[in-house]
Image (cartoon, rainbow, N blue to C red; front, side, top):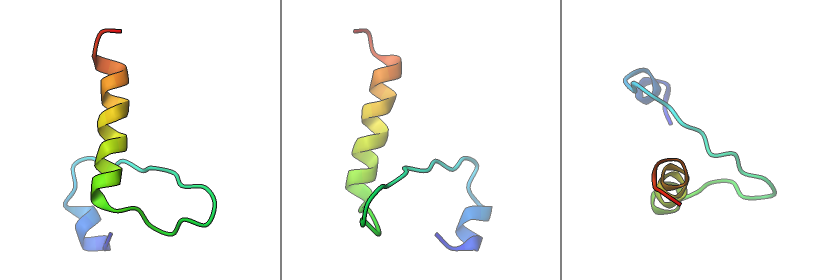
Length: 44
């Protein structure tokens, strides 16, 4: 993200990547974020 884009965000989240992966597309990042939200907020 550009410095300008970061400045206008209220909240930033990072998804750490290990290995040789250089980037992640928005749909994969969204799926990971929703999965972790569901783990914390939905009944088991």
